[in-house]
Structures are given as structure tokens and as C-alpha cells.
Image (tube, rainbow, N blue to C red):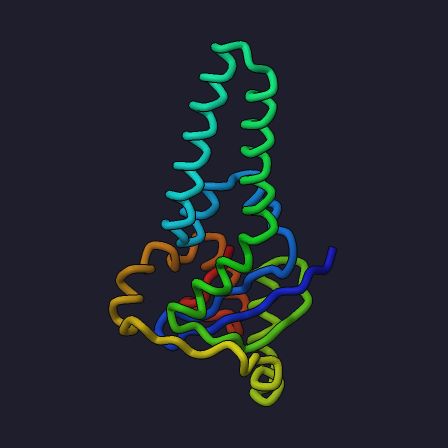
Length: 176
């Protein structure tokens, strides 16, 4: 199934592809997804809210309040749905805040393919697809960003083989 991806580029950290629309991994793995995608504040907020709601659910259950249990479970589901709906938007905003620039919007089956398609676009197509409404906010130096995000940008061994087979995919590009 073909999806639409926004491709972002950072001078020191390479490229990342973010899917448009609902994020199923964000929905199913809510706080874990947030931490893996480099959104620790969102992850902490999600963990805290889910723990508080679980504690409230236990308290309502002990008191025999069926309505309270249903309400807390509905609120837990709402947290998961909100993360699925807004998760990719949070990622796009975080990338922009970290100095990434949107270079293209491409249709692909997965993030890896989106990065490959974006690498093949002529410079004029990439700049046309770039959104001028998204400012290039560079609040941190490239060196501190590289240090902060170094773990997230390590290429898995399977991706190393893929990049060796396809020179259009550089070793600094994020493959999810």
C-alpha cells in the first residue's frame, strides 16, 4: 500500500521520512513509540497520564464504581488514539525545531523507499516540495544535535547492506 511521506533533511544528521496521517505504531506502542522517535517529553507525559489513569481505575474498581472504571478506560483509549492521530505531527514539529528542513513530499510504501525517492528528485523538485511556511529553526548547534541524536541515527546492519547496494541512500540517513 502506497503512503505519503514528508522527507526532512538536516545538514549534519541526514534525512528522515515522516508518514502523513494516522500513526499505527504510535497508537499501539504509545509512550514507547514517543521515546523511540526522540520525543521524550511526550513519552514522559504519556507514561505519567497512563499511570495516573491506571491508579484511578484501580481505585474506582476497589470502590465498586463501574462508571469510574469505564471512564478511566475511555480516557486511556483516548490517550492512545490521540497519539496515533497527532504523533506524526509531533515528529514533524520536533524535526523542524531541531533544524531539519522539509525537502520533499513523496509517495512510497515505507520510509526507506521514501528516502530513496527523495534522493532521486532533482534539486528543483525538492525545493518546490519544500514548505516555505515551515521556518528553519536552529536553536541548537549541529554538533550538539549530532551528539544528542547520535543513537537514533545509527544504521542497522540490514540497512547498511541496503545502502551499499543503493548509493542514493547515504549512511547518515535515518531508516525506520
